[in-house]
Image (cartoon, rainbow, N blue to C red):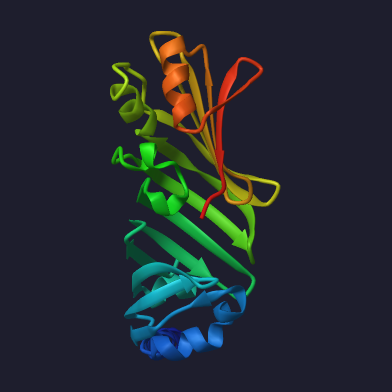
Length: 241
């Protein structure tokens, strides 16, 4: 008798999960409330089991398209129910996502974003072909507030810029964190010639690059690219588009 009850509950749960999974994605997005947070889209195809959203935008700025695959059994267990793959001219990435009206949690997040003129950086750097990468990211947002973040962020922009000046600088790396409710990446590295570099990306304050112990030739070259001298350091700052 008890076995029959358990089996009945399992079968009913599986059926309900399947019905939820095949709900049209367009309907779910309209009911989700994400439009109120500034997210827009042109078309949503498929279901929340497997679908695609194209023409995504954030407060009017285009951000590409996402493919969505979900597992209703994970959803019922409270785990990340969706695996999302993102592709756009600004980069590509993927993550496991669990979302509600109050929060968004992302796990196993990996991103690769090229440094282009669209980021607002000087053309001297945007033409290098550099990128910023996130691996193993874990993020939690309440609305637009960053509650927690971790992962490793790296960039080859310093190495490529140094090569154009005949120097050998390292790949910059560092942690992904939340600072005062904003997502931030702080990367750093030290070259064999004594040059120390730091690159800070913050959603609110923008991009900040700091160099210490640079030689006179490097200082002259970087001044042409918009670096300013402050207390013996070279500083480059730009808002993030």
